[in-house]
Length: 258
Image (cartoon, rainbow, N blue to C red; front, side, top):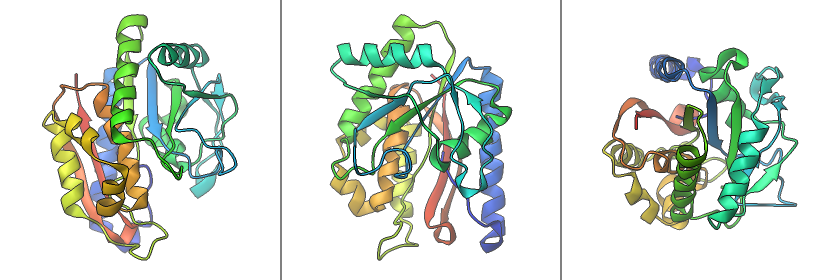
């Protein structure tokens, strides 16, 4: 689902439907009673600046304290160091050198969806960063492949019940001349392919095509592609979608069940 909201006064009816959809996603996650929640998202150059960039970064810590941007409380929540460390080691054997981050203050891209779907930090969380802020972001094909590696790690090596949440997107021209534009056709294409079990087709896109059709910040759709890759044959349903130029993005949320 999308990983931020803005002022509801600008579009109260749309905002109400978005909030209802987010609460429904939270309810569904809670009903699954997971042992671990993995949130795939991006950092907004708060933890990983342009001084050092890596395509994939996993938080490896026992606890995280949010950065506190956008009014998000700086309330600590638990991580899962042992799971995260195990995944980094497993990914290395599968051809992925995933960076480990011991100290992260998650910004809104992670902290907001966690606040919505995991109130009170009841479930331990693993921050999984796909660095779309990089000048050379990972390709959708590479993101899809790494999602498959995570699935293999969970099914072969672990006993936990895991929920993966891809947080961010959809079309999103932020700090660009076209800011405020929403490409509803692109957003609905992404949603349609994933919920119909054809998410793999999105791995055939290039980063340049996503930037062209969804804006530079539309690269956050990589998080949706990653989540879909962990359940590659699953079908699902659209929980909500609102084209919202008032919030500078297409706001959406879907659910997939393996």
